[in-house]
Length: 105
Image 1 (cartoon, rainbow, N blue to C red):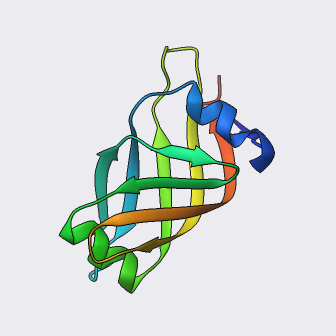
Image 2 (cartoon, rainbow, N blue to C red):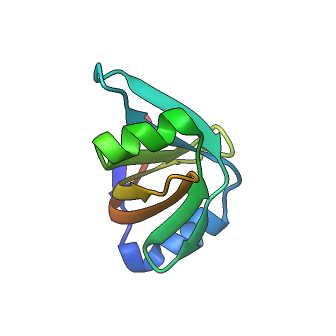
Image 3 (cartoon, rainbow, N blue to C red):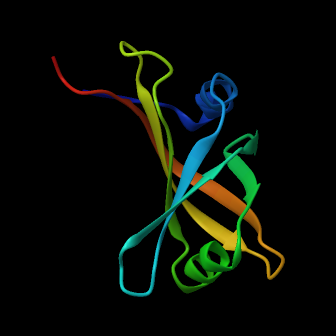
């Protein structure tokens, strides 16, 4: 079951949560998952990453962010976006879509 999150409301949803996960694609297309804390302004999120995350973003800027639910009855927050990463590992992600999601039933 998914509920769309308007990008104008994304900062409020992110503020309710703690650390989330930055998911990038490796060269062999397998996911690379990294736990991170995100800062957000409007629909732009900022964090930092290591060498692998930086290389993955530079090769393929499409990323997914995910925050786990805070309680069994709560929703996960999933954000798809486009990222840029500097050589020093500073990452900026422009959110393109977001949903609250939990298992149906």
